[in-house]
Image (cartoon, rainbow, N blue to C red; front, top):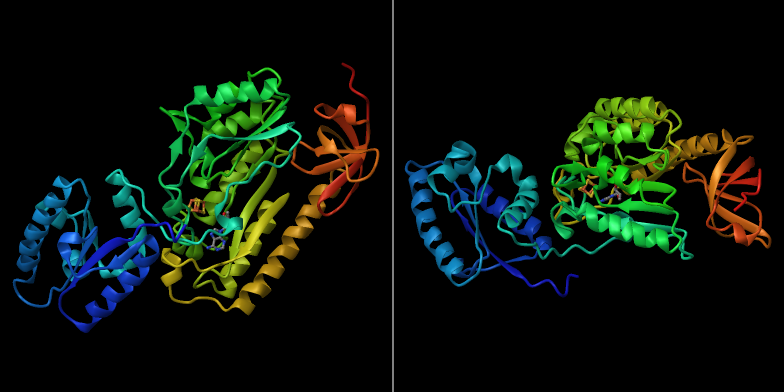
Length: 448
Ligand code: 5AD
Ligand code: SF4
């Protein structure tokens, strides 16, 4: 992606002290992965930053008069069909705040020295407001940035993209820059695709989106979409991923209580258990908020399997913060989870934060967290032994004579059985549980 990204030009005018010179360099560094390279010519710039100083009298008036000239450059660019973003940074921005935008509407962004870490987000939002996409220069990392891809080639299960993009701007994440704003596909188109899939033998769909529970089709949310798809003949199972705690509304929780096709599984990333860290991550929720949410979901669907994502070693994470993550995990009791060492992605706000954590510390914390999550997954799996679970049989098993599928809780299950059963939901008595899968026997053969 980086080679193809056309470079955008950044013009920074620095007023005042040495501190501002340093800050301007930092801003240029932070903006480089967003595709911006420096220029000396303001009339060519795609982004103009005035890094202002308040120290001398009349400094503010000087900024306004400079902005008057930049406004003319911006208008000339607009006439030529190109866009220019204008940002005011530094002490005048700090002192005058919103007043600057009121007095000079050509200004898109006002950012004080305390908030430079938010510059990537502010730039991305301003681009969106101008109807543009950002040619970001982030090297993709498959495990963080990609949506899942098809898991069963034989066509019994399918993924269905319903939503893309992200407006959350977690400070560690590149997705809001690379994928753009949250966007939902119309429900009618999704239903048509679901019907087509069902007619081809698909029994289970997983509704996909970077923030799938922010789904919004003209005011109609994910719960309404789930209920609509539950009426599609032949679709026995519906799942969705990935959800954000802030978008988990009452209607969706209620759907877990009474839509039979909606499987009792919820991937609800929390990332960390310390409020300090959650705040630095810009998650927009606390640990307590997350725990109460889990309680409400469990009240609606007591057997629901919970899954999550975790990051250890986020900048500034202390031992006590990490222990708060372990504590949250103990309270929630996860059925499965993904956990990662914090990875510094240049251009994201967290990459520039103080207090980066040493790799040995990250590795040690990850090991402890994964130990606990592994125990919980084992316990969840063991609790199914002796139960009869409805299993959607998806494909031949690894050994001759075996077939494999998934429980309602997304556990892999294998048993002896005829390949002709693929595509059916069959009752399987679970006889043993491993770390990652269950084994059992068909409890009864379904009749046509
Ligand atoms: N470092 C570590 N983990 C990350 N994720 C996203 N960005 C990063 C990063 N910079 C993880 C989050 C997210 C999952 C898809 O990837 O946990 O939920
Ligand atoms: Fe990234 Fe998910 Fe946060 Fe969006 S909600 S910024 S995709 S981690």
